[in-house]
Image 1 (tube, rainbow, N blue to C red):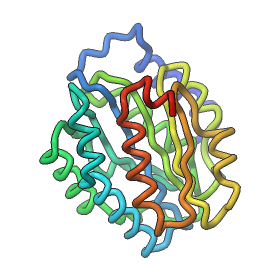
Image 2 (cartoon, rainbow, N blue to C red; image 1 turned 60 degrees about the vertical axis):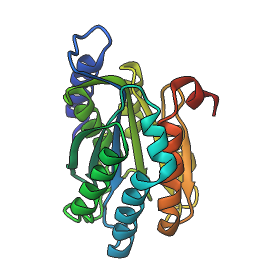
Image 3 (tube, rainbow, N blue to C red; image 1 turned 180 degrees about the horizontal axis):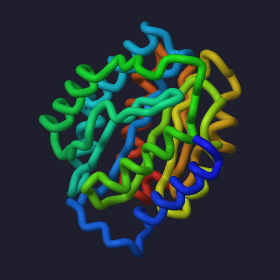
Image 4 (spheres, rainbow, N blue to C red; image 1 turned 45 degrees about the vertical axis):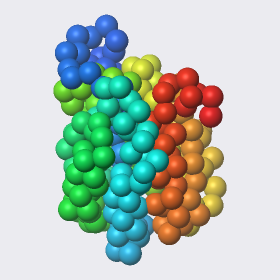
Length: 231
């Protein structure tokens, strides 16, 4: 995506997400986009570990407890990204064990997704797609993006620029940096990807640690606002 095109996309999404905009939607406590890296640096075994880890996280008793503790539930969607992006699991409202396990099953059916394999890692474009999902999802709650990956952005919109627009629109972006390819990736995420109230970076040494990391990350992201900030 060119610089001008990315700026236009950010501006359009920010306008749609702005508090002054009329967003008539189903009330939820949190709207959460899970944006997962499926670029060429992620091989077949690693894609499978992402699938298994995400599905297991939504079946985890502590994650389910966090979901059921939310009075209005959480809206969740799964976006997969590389140089291009795709919504792998459309928006679902999770309120209890049954809805969480249904989402886990949909993740298993959708992944591994390999449509975007190649050299490109377009974090900024993945954030733009995630913001568009938040703007048009039919829910109304605290907007959050959970982006995970194993490399720095090397194509598309610069993520820091998109992050700044997202924060102005009231969106919190947190990251999971997988360190098997780039040991200093967490610092790149801190400087250029995450932002907003309660934003944070978690790390996984490699994809074998992904499942536990995403489980802990979900528990933290699903906590009430003041608790998340306190962490």
